[in-house]
Amino acid sequence: MDDPRKVLARHGLSAKKSWGQNFLHDRSVHARIVAAAAAGEGDVVVEIGAGLGTLTAALAGAEPRAARIVAIERDPDMQRVLTAELAGLRGVEIVNQDALAFDFDAAARAAGRPLVVIGNLPYQIASALVIALVAAGARGAIARAIVMVQREMAQRLVAPPGSRTYGRLTVALAQHAEARILFHVRPGSFHPAPDVTSSVMCIVPRAVPLAPVHDPALFAEVVKQAFATRRKMLRRALAAGFGERAATAALAASGIAGTRRAEELSVADFARLANALGCEAEHARDET
Image (cartoon, rainbow, N blue to C red; front, top):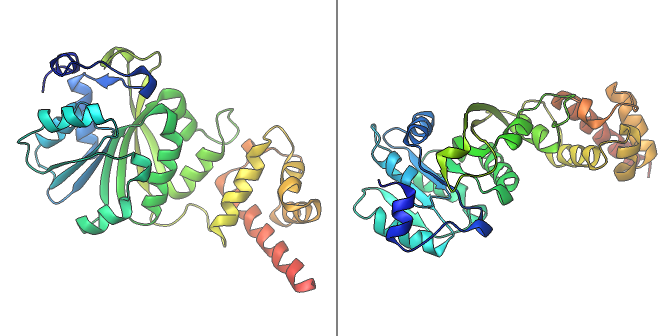
């Protein structure tokens, strides 16, 4: 497929800064993403933010060929480009939709197997998309996701406990998936060139959560409350959401000092804490 600059010129378009559009033109990066996706015969690949279709075309031309490629694009101008540029490519379906509204579960049921997801995630919704992908993977709808995000976000997603970038999203991802950075992509690989370096990540859903929790919703709420005021000690951060008595008792039961801060806790620590808070809630109900 032609260079993005030629494709844009052919259709009388330019990249929309307000949409955060940066089109990947480095074919070696296309090849590495396609190889990382490792889509084979029978696989259905969902591409988030297909844009001009350069990566879509690389996928469609790869061997072995995926059974079908679902190219999601919400920009009507880009949809017109995709329809014209990808005409004649077998097994490519163009979907004009916001990726956050895409039903991965329904697509996986239609495919008869978990999906392979790829895409350059728009900066504005990258966190929300990662959460959606992890949730869909936990339900068995996604086999793996090869996604590109800003390097700063990629480093946050794989940050270890104790680091400045370790946070709520890190814990949520680690609980339900294994994530690693595959390689970085320089700004010059895009048109127009962004101000930041990008990173391609591999996210593989876990068969079972990393740490056993009795109530997944409570686990998520504990992590949220702990990081809501991350500079505060845990006993104060948790007391704001669960009450001082319950927070103090749960910290003691889980063997976690109330003077610690959220970024110091591992996923297993959060799981113990959530389970202890659940037990405290049950005891409180029994006493009433």
